[in-house]
Structures are given as structure tokens and as C-alpha cells.
Image 1 (tube, rainbow, N blue to C red):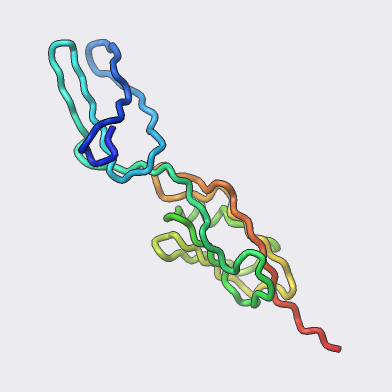
Image 2 (image 1 turned 180 degrees about the vertical axis):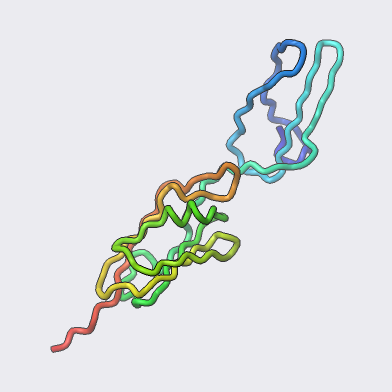
Length: 171
């Protein structure tokens, strides 16, 4: 296979094998590489004749697992205002339903409404106000999945906490 659009085919998958005459299938485990310019070239020979058939266009292999890169409110932040939205930025575009269902907020908040932006890399969760003087923990589980096919899941899970503003103490 090639990772430079067919310029070079340095990585040989199989050097030789005998097959019966007629149609054949060769199972291939896709290598764990990250490239948008992958091509495959099949070479066959019967000892007398020789033929090659390269793929006609580039395809992508995405082996990277997505990660959480930025969260709002920030981890360990205190005095978070009650109407603050939750925002999670991922390293790459995510599948909306699987990713949203992977998010847990504890204690629960009502009125959650997920909004996606920045090419499905930012999940903003609108919600009713947080409770006063409460520590919240948010977990993004490993079922969150990127948009590659068949999709890489988040690894490891991501967890952070913050606490909301407390009422002033009157004396």
C-alpha cells in the first residue's frame, strides 16, 4: 500500500501466495496509520503473465482516537455562575447521537439541549440553571465516537468537575 497517493508503494502486505485459478479473496487487516492519501495496488502473476491494479483514488485511514481538548467550565473551577453552559471541544469531528448519549452530568440538570458547532468538534450543552453551591462532575464515556468509518471511540473516558457559586453569608 501507499500513503503518498500512489507515488511509492513501499509497504508490501503479502509477498507471495498460491491460489486456485478463478476468483479469490484476500483478507487484509488495515494498518493503523493516519493518512488521507492511501492507495492500494494489487499485483498478480501466474509465473508467465504479470498485472497490477492500483486503486483509482486516494482514501483515508484514521487510526487516531478522539480526545477532549477543552472544557467549559474548566476543571476544578469554583464560583461558576448558575446559567453557565457546558462546552466540550473534541480533537476531531464526532458522531452527534453517540457522543451526546456518552455524556453524563451529575447531579443531573434539567432542560438539557445539545448544540453542535465548529464542524461537530464542539458540543455545547444548554440547560436550566445549575443549583447553588453544588459540585458537578461531567463524564464523557468511551462510547463517544468520531466520524471516521467505522469510527474510533474516545479513549480514555474524560471526567472533570467544577462547583457553582454559593450564596453570600450574611452576619
